[in-house]
Length: 323
Image 1 (cartoon, rainbow, N blue to C red):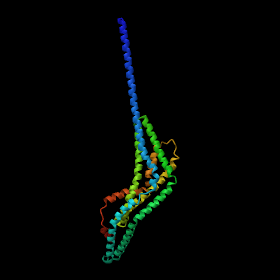
Image 2 (image 1 turned 60 degrees about the vertical axis):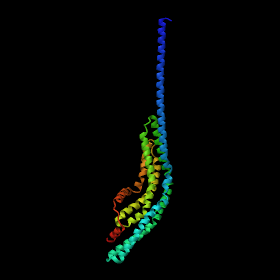
Image 3 (image 1 turned 90 degrees about the vertical axis):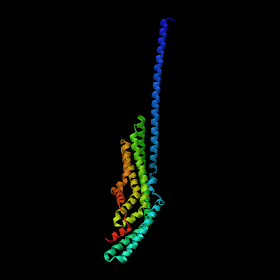
Image 4 (image 1 turned 135 degrees about the vertical axis):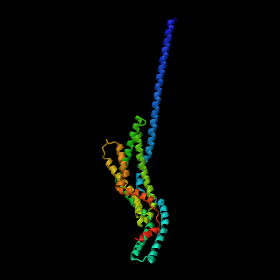
Protein backbone atom coordinates (compact mmCIF):
# COMPACT_ATOMS: atom_id res chain seq x y z
CA UNK A 1 0.00 0.00 0.00
CA UNK A 2 1.48 3.34 -1.01
CA UNK A 3 1.86 6.34 1.19
CA UNK A 4 -1.29 8.13 -0.10
CA UNK A 5 -3.43 5.08 0.53
CA UNK A 6 -2.14 4.80 4.06
CA UNK A 7 -2.88 8.46 4.76
CA UNK A 8 -6.37 8.09 3.30
CA UNK A 9 -7.03 4.97 5.34
CA UNK A 10 -5.81 6.73 8.50
CA UNK A 11 -8.09 9.69 7.83
CA UNK A 12 -11.05 7.36 7.33
CA UNK A 13 -10.30 5.57 10.60
CA UNK A 14 -9.96 8.88 12.44
CA UNK A 15 -13.23 10.08 10.96
CA UNK A 16 -15.00 6.88 11.98
CA UNK A 17 -13.60 7.07 15.50
CA UNK A 18 -14.64 10.72 15.77
CA UNK A 19 -18.14 9.85 14.60
CA UNK A 20 -18.36 7.02 17.11
CA UNK A 21 -17.14 9.27 19.92
CA UNK A 22 -19.66 11.98 19.04
CA UNK A 23 -22.43 9.42 18.74
CA UNK A 24 -21.43 7.93 22.08
CA UNK A 25 -21.39 11.35 23.67
CA UNK A 26 -24.83 12.11 22.27
CA UNK A 27 -26.08 8.74 23.51
CA UNK A 28 -24.65 9.40 26.96
CA UNK A 29 -26.31 12.82 26.94
CA UNK A 30 -29.65 11.23 26.07
CA UNK A 31 -29.19 8.68 28.84
CA UNK A 32 -28.32 11.43 31.34
CA UNK A 33 -31.41 13.42 30.36
CA UNK A 34 -33.57 10.31 30.58
CA UNK A 35 -32.20 9.47 34.02
CA UNK A 36 -32.71 13.06 35.23
CA UNK A 37 -36.30 13.15 33.94
CA UNK A 38 -36.93 9.73 35.42
CA UNK A 39 -35.71 10.90 38.81
CA UNK A 40 -37.96 13.96 38.53
CA UNK A 41 -40.94 11.73 37.78
CA UNK A 42 -40.07 9.53 40.76
CA UNK A 43 -39.84 12.64 42.99
CA UNK A 44 -43.17 13.93 41.67
CA UNK A 45 -44.75 10.53 42.23
CA UNK A 46 -43.45 10.46 45.79
CA UNK A 47 -44.80 13.98 46.44
CA UNK A 48 -48.22 13.09 45.01
CA UNK A 49 -48.33 9.81 46.96
CA UNK A 50 -47.29 11.45 50.23
CA UNK A 51 -49.77 14.25 49.66
CA UNK A 52 -52.55 11.71 49.13
CA UNK A 53 -51.69 9.92 52.38
CA UNK A 54 -51.86 13.22 54.29
CA UNK A 55 -55.11 14.33 52.67
CA UNK A 56 -56.67 10.88 53.07
CA UNK A 57 -55.80 10.95 56.79
CA UNK A 58 -57.48 14.32 57.31
CA UNK A 59 -60.45 13.54 55.06
CA UNK A 60 -61.40 10.66 57.39
CA UNK A 61 -62.73 13.39 59.68
CA UNK A 62 -65.60 13.88 57.19
CA UNK A 63 -66.66 10.26 57.66
CA UNK A 64 -66.64 10.83 61.44
CA UNK A 65 -68.85 13.94 61.30
CA UNK A 66 -72.15 12.19 62.18
CA UNK A 67 -70.58 10.52 65.22
CA UNK A 68 -68.66 13.58 66.43
CA UNK A 69 -71.65 15.91 66.03
CA UNK A 70 -74.27 13.69 67.66
CA UNK A 71 -72.36 12.42 70.70
CA UNK A 72 -70.91 13.96 73.83
CA UNK A 73 -68.03 12.76 76.00
CA UNK A 74 -68.96 9.94 78.41
CA UNK A 75 -70.27 11.21 81.72
CA UNK A 76 -67.81 8.89 83.46
CA UNK A 77 -64.96 11.09 82.19
CA UNK A 78 -66.57 14.17 83.73
CA UNK A 79 -68.22 13.08 86.98
CA UNK A 80 -64.92 12.25 88.68
CA UNK A 81 -63.77 15.84 88.17
CA UNK A 82 -67.18 17.14 89.23
CA UNK A 83 -67.11 15.21 92.49
CA UNK A 84 -63.62 16.54 93.14
CA UNK A 85 -64.92 20.12 93.07
CA UNK A 86 -68.06 19.17 95.00
CA UNK A 87 -65.92 17.70 97.80
CA UNK A 88 -63.92 20.93 97.92
CA UNK A 89 -66.92 23.29 97.80
CA UNK A 90 -69.32 21.46 100.16
CA UNK A 91 -67.36 22.18 103.39
CA UNK A 92 -67.26 25.89 102.53
CA UNK A 93 -71.01 25.88 101.97
CA UNK A 94 -71.61 24.24 105.32
CA UNK A 95 -69.27 26.75 106.99
CA UNK A 96 -71.04 29.65 105.28
CA UNK A 97 -74.47 28.37 106.36
CA UNK A 98 -73.28 28.05 109.97
CA UNK A 99 -71.78 31.57 109.93
CA UNK A 100 -74.97 33.07 108.53
CA UNK A 101 -77.16 31.18 110.99
CA UNK A 102 -75.07 32.48 113.90
CA UNK A 103 -75.18 35.98 112.44
CA UNK A 104 -78.97 35.87 112.16
CA UNK A 105 -79.37 34.56 115.72
CA UNK A 106 -76.82 36.68 117.57
CA UNK A 107 -74.89 39.25 115.61
CA UNK A 108 -77.39 41.20 113.56
CA UNK A 109 -79.36 43.88 115.39
CA UNK A 110 -81.04 45.48 112.37
CA UNK A 111 -84.01 44.17 110.42
CA UNK A 112 -82.26 44.97 107.15
CA UNK A 113 -79.17 42.98 108.14
CA UNK A 114 -81.30 40.01 109.16
CA UNK A 115 -83.25 40.12 105.89
CA UNK A 116 -80.05 40.30 103.91
CA UNK A 117 -78.57 37.38 105.83
CA UNK A 118 -81.73 35.31 105.36
CA UNK A 119 -81.64 36.02 101.62
CA UNK A 120 -78.00 34.98 101.51
CA UNK A 121 -78.80 31.82 103.49
CA UNK A 122 -81.52 30.96 100.97
CA UNK A 123 -79.05 31.43 98.11
CA UNK A 124 -76.56 29.15 99.84
CA UNK A 125 -79.14 26.41 100.28
CA UNK A 126 -80.24 26.73 96.64
CA UNK A 127 -76.59 26.68 95.58
CA UNK A 128 -75.92 23.58 97.64
CA UNK A 129 -78.84 21.84 95.93
CA UNK A 130 -77.66 22.94 92.46
CA UNK A 131 -74.12 21.78 93.14
CA UNK A 132 -75.42 18.40 94.26
CA UNK A 133 -77.52 18.18 91.10
CA UNK A 134 -74.83 19.46 88.71
CA UNK A 135 -74.10 15.98 87.24
CA UNK A 136 -77.81 15.63 86.50
CA UNK A 137 -77.97 19.13 84.97
CA UNK A 138 -75.09 18.31 82.63
CA UNK A 139 -76.70 14.98 81.74
CA UNK A 140 -79.89 16.83 80.77
CA UNK A 141 -77.80 19.17 78.57
CA UNK A 142 -76.25 16.13 76.88
CA UNK A 143 -79.61 14.45 76.26
CA UNK A 144 -81.14 17.61 74.75
CA UNK A 145 -78.12 18.36 72.54
CA UNK A 146 -77.84 14.77 71.28
CA UNK A 147 -81.56 14.53 70.48
CA UNK A 148 -81.51 17.88 68.66
CA UNK A 149 -78.37 16.89 66.75
CA UNK A 150 -79.85 13.56 65.64
CA UNK A 151 -83.06 15.28 64.55
CA UNK A 152 -81.27 18.01 62.58
CA UNK A 153 -78.65 15.82 60.92
CA UNK A 154 -81.41 14.02 59.00
CA UNK A 155 -82.48 17.34 57.42
CA UNK A 156 -79.67 17.35 54.86
CA UNK A 157 -76.41 17.53 56.77
CA UNK A 158 -75.05 14.56 54.80
CA UNK A 159 -75.27 16.66 51.63
CA UNK A 160 -73.09 19.28 53.29
CA UNK A 161 -70.57 16.64 54.36
CA UNK A 162 -70.44 15.25 50.80
CA UNK A 163 -70.00 18.76 49.42
CA UNK A 164 -67.04 19.45 51.71
CA UNK A 165 -65.48 16.11 50.86
CA UNK A 166 -66.01 16.68 47.14
CA UNK A 167 -64.46 20.13 47.27
CA UNK A 168 -61.50 18.70 49.17
CA UNK A 169 -61.05 16.01 46.51
CA UNK A 170 -61.15 18.68 43.82
CA UNK A 171 -58.36 20.58 45.55
CA UNK A 172 -56.22 17.45 45.72
CA UNK A 173 -56.78 16.80 42.01
CA UNK A 174 -55.49 20.28 41.18
CA UNK A 175 -52.52 19.70 43.49
CA UNK A 176 -51.32 16.53 41.75
CA UNK A 177 -51.85 18.00 38.28
CA UNK A 178 -49.77 21.06 39.19
CA UNK A 179 -47.15 18.77 40.73
CA UNK A 180 -46.83 16.79 37.49
CA UNK A 181 -46.15 20.04 35.64
CA UNK A 182 -43.54 21.06 38.20
CA UNK A 183 -42.67 19.23 41.39
CA UNK A 184 -43.16 22.35 43.53
CA UNK A 185 -46.07 23.74 41.53
CA UNK A 186 -48.76 22.63 43.98
CA UNK A 187 -46.96 23.24 47.28
CA UNK A 188 -48.86 26.42 48.20
CA UNK A 189 -52.22 24.86 47.36
CA UNK A 190 -51.36 21.75 49.36
CA UNK A 191 -50.26 23.85 52.36
CA UNK A 192 -53.54 25.80 52.41
CA UNK A 193 -55.56 22.61 51.92
CA UNK A 194 -53.92 20.70 54.77
CA UNK A 195 -54.03 23.74 57.07
CA UNK A 196 -57.79 24.03 56.62
CA UNK A 197 -58.35 20.32 57.21
CA UNK A 198 -56.03 20.36 60.23
CA UNK A 199 -57.90 23.34 61.71
CA UNK A 200 -61.21 21.56 61.17
CA UNK A 201 -59.94 18.41 62.88
CA UNK A 202 -58.56 20.35 65.86
CA UNK A 203 -61.80 22.31 66.23
CA UNK A 204 -63.94 19.17 66.41
CA UNK A 205 -61.62 17.43 68.86
CA UNK A 206 -61.20 20.61 70.94
CA UNK A 207 -64.95 20.76 71.43
CA UNK A 208 -64.92 17.40 73.27
CA UNK A 209 -62.02 18.54 75.45
CA UNK A 210 -63.77 21.81 76.35
CA UNK A 211 -67.03 20.00 77.19
CA UNK A 212 -65.11 17.77 79.60
CA UNK A 213 -63.28 20.74 81.14
CA UNK A 214 -66.28 23.03 81.64
CA UNK A 215 -68.47 20.07 82.63
CA UNK A 216 -66.09 19.37 85.51
CA UNK A 217 -66.24 23.06 86.47
CA UNK A 218 -70.06 23.23 86.49
CA UNK A 219 -70.34 22.84 90.31
CA UNK A 220 -67.82 25.66 90.68
CA UNK A 221 -69.90 27.76 88.26
CA UNK A 222 -73.00 27.40 90.46
CA UNK A 223 -70.93 28.18 93.55
CA UNK A 224 -69.36 31.35 92.14
CA UNK A 225 -72.61 32.60 90.59
CA UNK A 226 -74.33 32.91 93.98
CA UNK A 227 -71.86 35.50 95.31
CA UNK A 228 -71.90 39.02 93.95
CA UNK A 229 -68.09 39.51 93.72
CA UNK A 230 -67.71 36.32 91.64
CA UNK A 231 -71.10 36.25 89.94
CA UNK A 232 -69.75 37.20 86.49
CA UNK A 233 -67.12 34.43 86.65
CA UNK A 234 -69.75 31.85 87.57
CA UNK A 235 -72.00 33.06 84.76
CA UNK A 236 -69.08 32.85 82.32
CA UNK A 237 -68.33 29.27 83.34
CA UNK A 238 -71.97 28.25 82.97
CA UNK A 239 -72.35 29.93 79.56
CA UNK A 240 -69.21 28.25 78.23
CA UNK A 241 -70.52 24.87 79.40
CA UNK A 242 -73.77 25.58 77.56
CA UNK A 243 -72.10 26.85 74.38
CA UNK A 244 -69.58 24.03 73.99
CA UNK A 245 -72.30 21.43 74.68
CA UNK A 246 -74.69 22.80 72.06
CA UNK A 247 -72.05 23.79 69.49
CA UNK A 248 -72.82 20.72 67.27
CA UNK A 249 -76.30 22.15 66.67
CA UNK A 250 -74.73 25.20 65.01
CA UNK A 251 -72.35 23.01 63.00
CA UNK A 252 -75.16 20.77 61.74
CA UNK A 253 -77.19 23.80 60.66
CA UNK A 254 -74.09 25.04 58.85
CA UNK A 255 -73.77 21.69 57.04
CA UNK A 256 -77.41 21.87 55.96
CA UNK A 257 -76.82 25.38 54.59
CA UNK A 258 -73.57 24.32 52.86
CA UNK A 259 -75.25 21.32 51.23
CA UNK A 260 -78.10 23.51 49.99
CA UNK A 261 -75.97 26.40 48.73
CA UNK A 262 -73.10 24.46 47.11
CA UNK A 263 -75.55 22.53 44.95
CA UNK A 264 -76.61 25.81 43.32
CA UNK A 265 -73.11 27.28 42.81
CA UNK A 266 -72.08 27.53 39.11
CA UNK A 267 -69.53 24.91 38.02
CA UNK A 268 -67.07 27.51 36.72
CA UNK A 269 -66.28 28.70 40.26
CA UNK A 270 -63.05 26.95 41.41
CA UNK A 271 -63.36 24.33 44.16
CA UNK A 272 -60.54 26.13 45.97
CA UNK A 273 -62.76 29.11 46.81
CA UNK A 274 -65.75 26.89 47.52
CA UNK A 275 -63.84 24.77 50.05
CA UNK A 276 -62.26 27.77 51.79
CA UNK A 277 -65.63 29.55 52.06
CA UNK A 278 -67.41 26.39 53.25
CA UNK A 279 -64.80 25.49 55.86
CA UNK A 280 -64.59 29.03 57.23
CA UNK A 281 -68.38 29.16 57.40
CA UNK A 282 -68.49 25.78 59.15
CA UNK A 283 -65.82 26.70 61.71
CA UNK A 284 -67.29 30.15 62.33
CA UNK A 285 -70.93 29.07 62.41
CA UNK A 286 -71.10 28.79 66.24
CA UNK A 287 -70.03 32.44 66.48
CA UNK A 288 -72.77 33.47 64.05
CA UNK A 289 -75.54 31.19 65.29
CA UNK A 290 -74.84 31.06 69.04
CA UNK A 291 -73.64 34.65 69.28
CA UNK A 292 -70.35 36.44 68.70
CA UNK A 293 -70.64 38.27 72.00
CA UNK A 294 -70.49 35.09 74.04
CA UNK A 295 -67.33 33.97 72.24
CA UNK A 296 -65.65 37.29 72.84
CA UNK A 297 -66.81 37.08 76.43
CA UNK A 298 -64.99 33.76 76.70
CA UNK A 299 -61.65 35.49 76.14
CA UNK A 300 -62.55 38.21 78.65
CA UNK A 301 -63.64 35.54 81.12
CA UNK A 302 -60.29 33.72 80.87
CA UNK A 303 -58.47 36.99 81.49
CA UNK A 304 -60.62 37.73 84.54
CA UNK A 305 -60.02 34.27 86.00
CA UNK A 306 -56.27 34.67 85.63
CA UNK A 307 -56.35 38.13 87.19
CA UNK A 308 -58.84 37.42 89.98
CA UNK A 309 -57.40 37.25 93.47
CA UNK A 310 -58.46 34.31 95.69
CA UNK A 311 -61.54 35.06 97.79
CA UNK A 312 -62.20 33.29 101.06
CA UNK A 313 -65.74 32.17 101.80
CA UNK A 314 -65.77 34.25 104.96
CA UNK A 315 -64.92 37.45 103.07
CA UNK A 316 -67.66 36.75 100.52
CA UNK A 317 -70.28 36.10 103.21
CA UNK A 318 -69.37 39.27 105.11
CA UNK A 319 -69.41 41.32 101.91
CA UNK A 320 -72.85 40.02 100.97
CA UNK A 321 -74.26 40.41 104.47
CA UNK A 322 -73.10 43.99 105.03
CA UNK A 323 -74.76 45.32 101.85
